[in-house]
Image: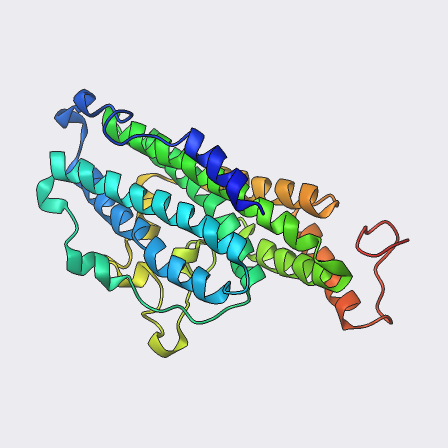
Length: 295
C-alpha cells in the first residue's frame, strides 16, 4: 500500500493555521478591494474538494488504498478553503463566503474513467501550484502572499502523491499498463497545451455533468462565473511564460513516468496515437525503442 507512507510524509510537513501563518504582519494599506474579492472566489473554488472527494470515492470503490489517501487530500484541500476564509474573516468579513455560496458548488459529477481522472487531477495540482505562486507574486499584502505560497507547496506535494498512484497503475499487467499509458497520454495532451481553449485548463473549469450543462463546472457556479479567466488574464497575469512552465512540468514528469522523451505536446500526442494502435490489436505495433512492449 502507498497510503501509509504518504500519510507519514504529508503529516511531517503539515502546516498549522494558527502558528505558521504570519497573521500579525497584516498591512491593510496593501490589500485592495479587487484583491480581496479574488480571495473569496479562491476560497469557494477550493471548497470544490468536497464534490471531487465524493467522485473519487464513488469511482474508486475498487481501490481502498487510493481511497484512503483521498482522506488526507480532502482534509488538506478543505484547509486551503478554510485559511482563505479565515483571512477574510479577520480582514474583510463582509466578503466571507456564505454557506449557500459554498454549497452551490457541491453537485454530482458524472462517472468517468478512474485513470483519466487521476491524470487530470495530477495535472490540476501542477497547474494550481503555478497559479498560486503567480498569485503570491501579484498580491502586495504580506499575509496573503504567505498563504498563497503555503498552499502552493501543498499542491506540489499532492501532485507527487498522485504520481505515485500513476506509477503503480503502470504495473497492472501488460494490458492494464497500456491502458494506463493511453489514459495518461490522452489527458496529458489536453492539460499540457499552452494555449487555453474555451477556458482555463483545470478540473474546476471542465464540464462534469451532462444533465446540468452548461452550468456543470465549478467555475460556472461561482457568484462570478467569469472570475477565473479575468483573474488569470488581467489580474495575476498568468501569461504564456507561466503556461510554458506548467506544460514543461507535465511533460517532464510524463517523460520520467513513461520512459520516453516528450519535448513537446506534439511528441506526447504521437505517443498517445501509438499506444492506441497497440491497444487496438497486434496489427498496429509501436516503433522500435518505444518501451511499451517487450523487444
